[in-house]
Amino acid sequence: MKNLLSLSVLAFIIILFSGCPYSSEVTIDQPSVKLDEKLLGKWEGKSSTDYTYTVTKLDDKTYNIDKKSASTGDVTNYNAFLSEINGTRFMNVYEPGGENNTYYFYKVEVTSSGSKTTLIPVTENIDEKFTTSSELKDFFKKNMANSYFFAKEEDIYIRVD
Image (tube, rainbow, N blue to C red; front, side):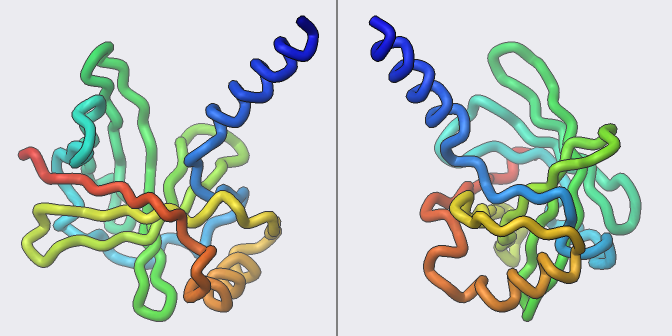
């Protein structure tokens, strides 16, 4: 019985944390890339209509993202900004309001028409921790071409407004 309980707890923890992108207490860099107007608007996952994402301008370099549950109407708020490394755009995403934010990172690809956006998470399998943005950015520069760097699953969003 004790083993069954331990296995259940372990399974829950694995499910809870699976699929989360790499996180850090530092950003790739400070917000410096101007907003991409094509990212503004209302989005829905291509494979699921469980949530809608409304992306608005917070300032010239920062997005406000409201994630709304279709079933409950609950809204979770995020802020995000873009960083660029060797021509690749990354989105730094965080929940605002805390003293120490946790940042999640996604490679961003937007179609020329702006009708589809693909977010490719940086893999959760990175174990390194960084204390400065320059250390994190250097790590990304050195490793982003490696096959393990990005998660296998990508998130595709379709504009719905």
